[in-house]
Length: 45
Image (tube, rainbow, N blue to C red; front, side):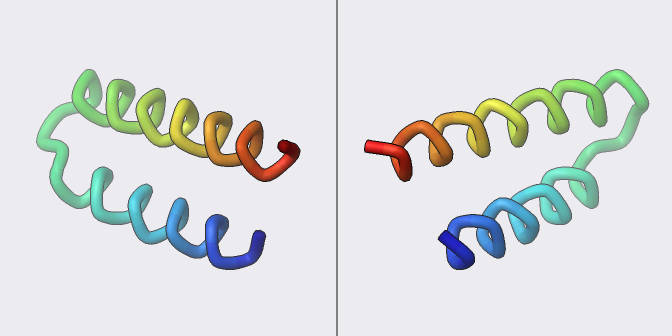
């Protein structure tokens, strides 16, 4: 589980570094949130 959290953090930082606008940041954060939610659901199974 710690590995998935580390990967999510790295993905978040990479996405935030790549976005150029506030709107882009919002989409990036939403995408990362969805990925974390999906990995958390998979970890429960």
